[in-house]
Image 1: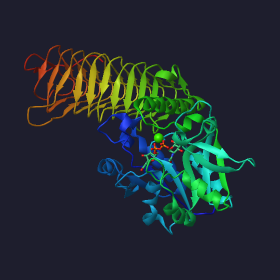
Image 2: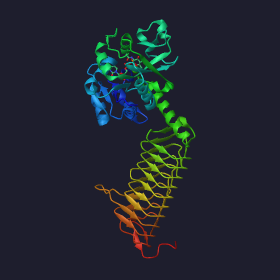
Image 3: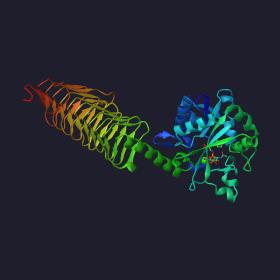
Image 4: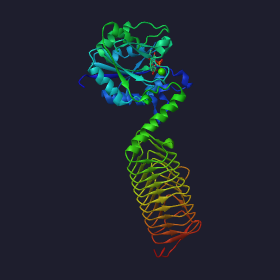
Length: 452
Ligand code: UD1
Ligand code: CA
């Protein structure tokens, strides 16, 4: 495609039917604001930040999206035609063609927008519109064609005659225009019976001038789900989820129950990984190959290596090397780093800490702000007492140490290589390598720790 292209996304409407204090386009879909989808698709096709027409909740929308869009404000919502007109100052003379889409139609794909722009590049007339044939969908303008099969007009449902209502070819609401013609035609739109300037009336204007209006018919009905109510929001969520889940299954990931598998758009999964029911893989999480994740697991901004097993656990901002086993019932928080072969689970929590290769932490322990060496065994109920009321202090446990059940490690503190602590020890001072510390507060008994 050689023509230069800019995009306008309409997002000034209030979204009254969502019954919300939050502007419609900021409602979350798979964890991202609704409008982010339209922005991403338009930007992918035009190669530049789209012009977003904002009105209701404009400040909140700007704050949420920052420089991903160029903003123009439509002070009063006088219709879709009037909304597009607001972009004229930002775009006139900047591109040969202008793509128009909505901020509340999140599943309209990049491929569809590209097909629309390509059709217009080959059209002698001033515009190409997107249509969908569906006997099921409601609330769409009807595409009226003449006896020669050419598009003549778009009629809104409210104004349609009974015959026109039976038309099953619907106006999606996405268009590609020749720019100079668009800016010249918009001021000529008539006022509708509802007192608005309808962008759809531009089709009739083009035809009256003898211009050819092309229509590209969409294949996948799910792409045109418009979000006006929370019911439709859930419908869009399900359709988007299905689209992503299908992509991962075709890429070699087993989803035992796609209906309860929630994979965010930016997450990545490796081949032959199995995801068990009720699992959420959120944000930019990455899971390697041959893993088993779930059931009942949340991964949030977490990176996992190959051949790992995570069961019934919540992992946030964590990093797992290969062959790590987590859960059931573990909570890994920001900065948790589990090296190869670590096993941790059963009501354990790890924050801002590294567990060295092969370390074991099997039963209800808390490890925070700690560096734990290779092959360390953390006994049941061990706690790093990292907070003294003022600051967070570090615990260091060197390779091969054995921490007895219910040990309190009062940080800052260091346990030497191959040292041991007795059950119930309250460790307030350094324990040298190869020694044993017992009691409250723990005393070091000068003898070799173990025969290990
Ligand atoms: C519009 C089309 C209809 C099409 C349908 C598809 C018109 C007149 N009708 O109807 O043919 O089938 O979309 O969904 O265009 N908006 C503004 N400013 C305004 C009015 C609307 O920014 O003054 C935005 C809304 O926020 C929304 C989009 O434009 O994102 C569509 O507006 P909406 O009122 O929902 O149009 P429909 O009545 O659905
Ligand atoms: Ca709508």
